[in-house]
Figure 1: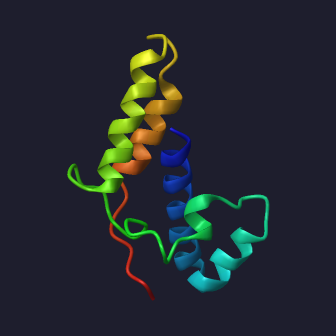
Figure 2: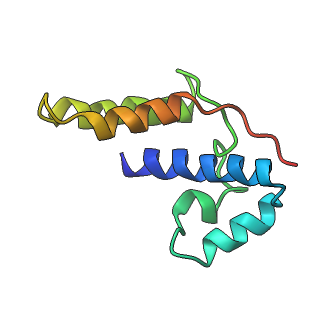
Length: 98
């Protein structure tokens, strides 16, 4: 669930940066040196699936399936966080290097 949430949030931040006219490489460098540093952001250009959109048969899709494990062990009354992470992952569109 942590890997999935880092993936989703990093991609959302990069998409936000696009809307603000922020250069992707500069934003990734900032993330790498700030408190938001994470595995995906630090290796974004080296990670094969980093730019993929959601697909049931790719690594992004596998992350959504992995979150299902958290849903499986969560009490029925406390599934909001894993469900939000799954939703964010499922909404990821392919990201083209600008």
